[in-house]
Amino acid sequence: MAEDIKKNKQERNDKPQKNRKERPVKIDDGLDKRLVSVRRVSKTVKGGRTMHFSALVVIGDGKGNIGMGIGKAAEVPNAIDKATVVAKKNMKKVSLNENTIPHETIGKFGATSVLMMPAEVGHGVIAGGAARAVLEVAGVKNIVTKIHGSTNRINVVKATMNGLLGLKTREEIASRRGKKPEEI
Image (cartoon, rainbow, N blue to C red; front, side):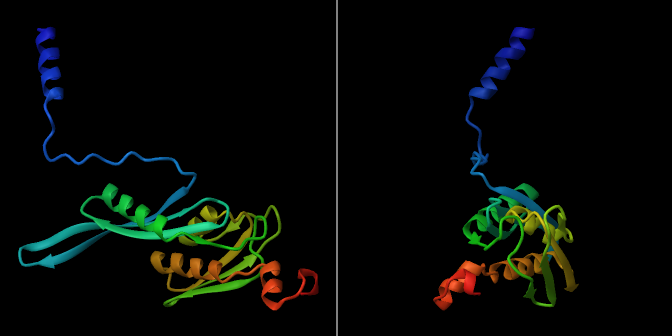
């Protein structure tokens, strides 16, 4: 009897699977991925409502490269995969001073503004949920932030990224002005 079960199992495994999508093999590329939010969204149609899931993902390498992506699908894992692909396409470089930001900045997007101030070593990342995810994947270790206005997670992530992308180090400003960094 046990042999018959093994034989039937073997036959089932030998048959090709129909309509099964193979999930892509994930390669570790040194990127830190954070799932910021998953929302259930619906569209009202003639027969009722169709439910989908929207995922917001931020990725970074911890050395100043960050990206964010939004993906929508009928199932949560597919939405996360789509958002990750979009985030990898939207990778951008951020100027950092070792483990903090070079100067105070305000990032704005829509009704959201995120105030970011550099902090001393040992202070840690003091930030709200969505802003914290962006800062940690970027590699910022010491920073103080405050979110003003809307706290919608998508807007907070975009405002934080806008603020980080506006940062300039002393060397970048000096080269733009044609001076030495010590003169500034």
